[in-house]
Length: 256
Image 1 (tube, helix red, strand yellow):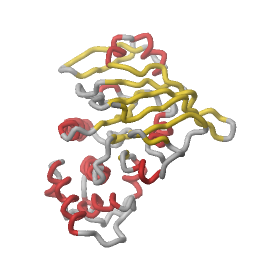
Image 2 (image 1 turned 90 degrees about the horizontal axis):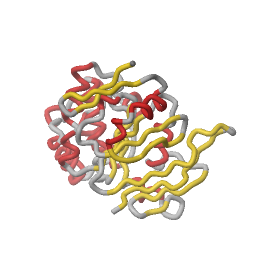
Image 3 (image 1 turned 60 degrees about the vertical axis):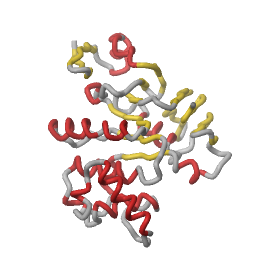
């Protein structure tokens, strides 16, 4: 069953083409990575999928609902997104459990009353993601990686079908990055469908089933992980001569 379908999606701003004729279908059971260099249009594409930006042309169908023909707020409940913007903008004194609960109102901070059911769900999600020990900790007192995970919890309050992680390892040191990546397996166990956006191939975990390659706003590939055997295509997309090796089911690259 299709969760997401993009047909000939393009985006331009002030006569500049940002995305051109993007076609993508994500089915239930698939976990996707979107790989491409900085400036390839990854974040713009994610904002379209999250219904935060409308395409200049093309069709976007999410959980059977066509963007432009239904209430956008009904569509947004199917999509969760975590980005650097949200992390940098969030009020630092807000307790972690309140950060999670603010997802019910899509607000930066908590300014409305919570029902007992909302509070209980926020605590349940924190427990599921092994974060409950931080429930009463102010957001600004959490480590960078812990903040990322709390924002993931916030994105889960409506049980979205798809969770977009837009370069979530930005700002993490190596140890924190590896701990964060390992914790993401909890989301797979929860049967969430992840779109993991990155320009680092070594962040693409073994549970990722499909890959999209973006280059200068165009989709160069969308399919299974077999693309990692195509060093010529990866070289074209990334802009440098790429060599690939595997270790413990992870992919790594180097400059030839």
